[in-house]
Image (cartoon, rainbow, N blue to C red):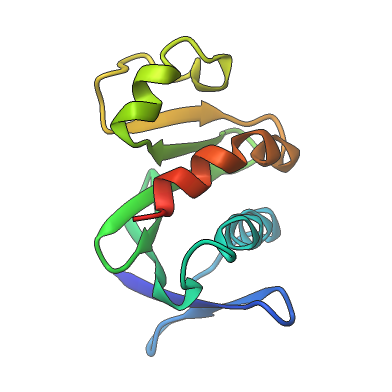
Length: 133
């Protein structure tokens, strides 16, 4: 199921939906999306972003229809994002405590646990690098 969303930089808000069905996100998930969009808005054309529910386990933010650069799950019990880190960043951050939740450092996506949405700020440069083509 593909869901489209657009970011309105003037109002700093996102519009989420698909023709037949609205995507049901919690307010925390909406805040996570808004935060990610605000991080990358100066670096990419946010009209090229999309969101897909590729699994029951996470939601993906896609850039350009192909770059599944960020996956997230943010519930009362589970809070994490995973980023498609560029290879040079993977090598530089093998021991970075931000990615301690990622056990297999040879995978394409690297997981970072969150205790709150405020933790996204520390991940901002990695979010930008994962999205920028």
